[in-house]
Image (cartoon, rainbow over all chains, first blue to last red; front, side):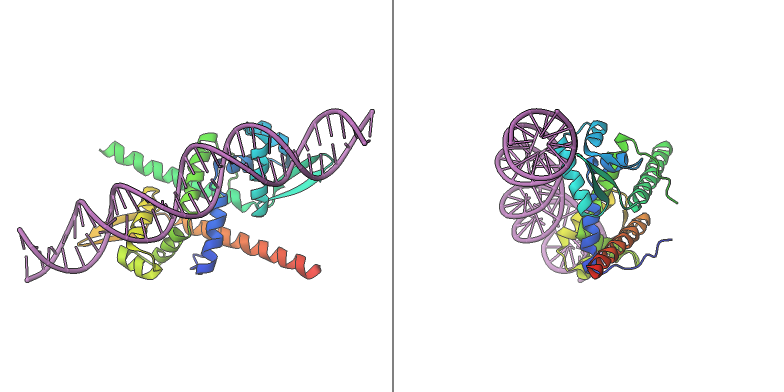
Length: 111
Length: 111
DNA sequence: AGCTTGTATTACCGTATAAGCATATTGTAA
DNA sequence: TTACAATATGCTTATACGGTAATACAAGCT
């Protein structure tokens, strides 16, 4: 369960940085694709309808944050998730958003 | 546990937005302060050494995202956490960062 | 009413970042 | 080597965001 510890001021910046990495829709889509298994860059491109340079750039950022790892397979660069906690975080956010929408809906139905 | 469901493209933008809210150090510090209990704006200001308009602005953003709720007590505006999942997320990030630093340390000790 | 404290808002500035395009690099095969 | 496919990188532009300062608003007090 959550430890709910107070985080130090230095740590705050690292945590904020991680959240920033996760705060881009394109990157979330890429991670979403990779959830099913490792993919090459072009495979991600075709699944996301984003440009190849764009995908490459985002993959580099994700790799730099340690969320994704890279290996070469001949001509291809194969990327895969290297930190599953990102999906747990996404689930937490989804649940939070659901709860929020539900309470908002209640407000409307009462009014 | 994590459900690891695939999130829809519309949802991606909402999730990204939530992460963006969490990606600012100042906001994380404010949330960190509020973890111990409700506080007025000036109390947060004194704890964070940020300017009052700055704190107010961030609080508005946090409230808009439903992470914090506001009530008036006379002259004061009292803010408090309204979504505890944020701390769970912070813990996840902290643990992830720890793991990462640990493996990096191993790399160095081997080399 | 006027005064004071606490809070919110506005307007501006500087910075950061994502997307697009062109180009460079890497790796493979002929 | 050349040619080609896959991937990465620079560069530019547009946009968004955070901080600051000045100001406006709200609520209590005399």
